[in-house]
Length: 426
Image (tube, rainbow, N blue to C red; front, side):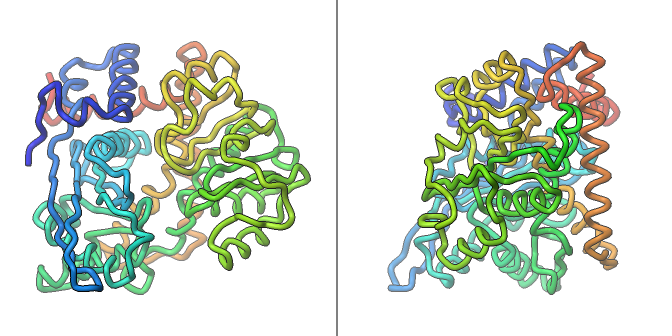
C-alpha cells in the first residue's frame, strides 16, 4: 500500500523515525538543500505491509505482520536488510529505510534505500517454522523485489540461511534461478566471500581513521563493544588483529570487562559453546549500561538503536564513538557528546561495510564472476577510507562541523544533484 502522509500516521508517532526526520531537516537546512528534495526524502516512496499466516509445528496457525519500506530509488534499485524481531514496527522500518538511502548515497553506491521486517521473536521458532515464515513473507513481497527493483539482505534476526530460502522461493516462483534477488547468501548459492565479516570490518576501517585523526596509535588504543553479534564479534576480531586492546564486550545477557584486554578468540569460542557471555571466567561481569560508561579510547555500540540518550550521554568517557548499529545515539545525546569533545563516527559511514560488500555480491551475481576474499577486503577498505576522508575534509572545510552533519551533507548533496538531473526536483 502507498504511504499514508497524514500527521497521525505510525511513522510520525515513532521516535526513531522522528529522530531521523529531524536530522534530515536540520542538516538539509544547514547546507541549503533544495526544499523539494527534502520534502521528497521525508517520507518513503512505498510501504508494503503484509499478513503472513504460518502453520506451526503443532499444526496451529499464527499470523505475523511484515513490512517492506522502499524509501528512495533515485540512485538505483532499492537496497536494505530484512530483520526478524519482536519490536519491529512500520515506523522503525521506515527510519531504517531512510538511513539506507543516505548511507548508499554517502558511500557512492548506485543503490537506493529500503528496509524490511517481521514482528516475531525468531528464537521462539523452530527451523522449519522460520523457513515457512520466510518463504511466505517472500511470496507476499515478491512482486516488489528483484535484482533490478529491490534487493533484500540479512539484518537482526536473519542470516545467510534466511537469504537462501528467500532466493529459492523467489526463483521457484520465477521459473529459474535468480541469485541476484538477495545478498548475504551462502557462497554456494551465489554469495560473496568476506560478506559475513563485512560490517564489522568496515567499523574497524573507520575506527582506524578516527584514531589517526585523534592522534592515538593502534597499539595504545582501548576498545569497548556493546553487542557481540554478527557486527560486534567481527569488529572485535578485526580490531584485535590490528593490535587494538578489546577490554569489554557485551550481549543481551551481560557485559564482560578486563582492563588488561580480553582474549578475543577465547570469548568467541565461549559464546559459540554457551550461546551467551554469561559466566565467562576470565573477566568481570558488568551491565550493558556500565560498558557504555567505561573509560576507553573507542566505544562501538553494535547492538540496537537508541542505547545512548540524554539520560546517559554525560556518563560516556570514550574519546571516540563508532556507530556499528543503526541509530544508537539520540539527537540529544549527540549534542551532549559534541559539547564533551567526543568524536562520533556516524552509522551511515561506520557500519557501511555490509552494504558495500552486498553491492559487491550483487555485481558478482549479475556478471557471474566472483572475487577472492583478499580482493573484497581491499576494495572495501578503499571505499570506506575514501568515504571517511571525504566526510572529514567536508567537516574541516565547514569550520569543524561534526561528522554526522558532514556525512549527511555529503550524502544529501549527491542525492540533490541526482534528483535534479532526473527531473525529480526543481
